[in-house]
Image 1 (tube, rainbow, N blue to C red):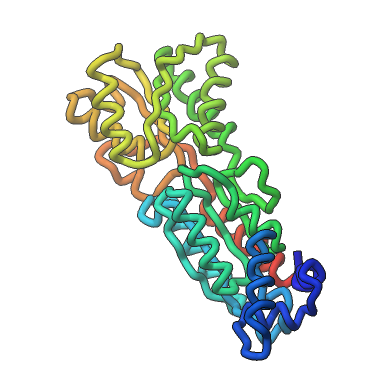
Image 2: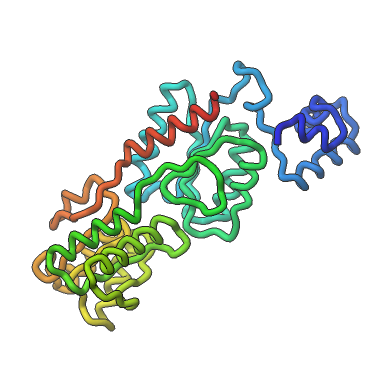
Length: 310
């Protein structure tokens, strides 16, 4: 919804709407209150970039990531920032800490900062998609990266996680493994779901039976992988191989295995996902599915710039 459509709903001019949002003195408090209340009802927020001349652009792009210290995302952040800076834009970076509530607050803050558009890697934990619906409703350009959101209609950039999960599991099967444990990420996240489905489909493709107790929830970071393996190996039969949802979980699992005196690759094989830069520098280099991090960042930046300027 643009300012003219919203003004029509309020039965006022677009200039009056602008005055209400800018707290101008030449508008009555009753009219201002009515406009702001209607805006809340319709989830309307004025988009400065959409209604101002090119010289009045903010030249700001909001970038919301779920974990700024997680080793995969900084590659994407740096690539995006480098590319948009060359186009004359600056980044406002927010870390949602995998918290959907905080993410919602950050998106609304960025809207209020009149960013021209947003690039968002969604948080793992959320109750609703209200902030994303507000972006859609107000016609604010945004790109979703890495993690798909069902029901949200925006540009998306990511990898084929299902294919990656299949390839990782296939690699272990071809090494002769029959007991392959999958350390799954949070259930509500598309990357975790698709990689798990790739794992299951690889087992089916090679006529191997699927056992539900060979999939365990392990989160997304090193501590998750470490604690999960420590707990699992106390109570269950040992697998001969592990496919971890990502490299941090795999690295945490490797530390736990080392403490348990289980040698890699002599006693067990392990595969991660992402190909973070230090995976090959570990005491035992980590086998991992590569993700094109630079290409993901470049594509996200190019799309948001095109949507802002197009």
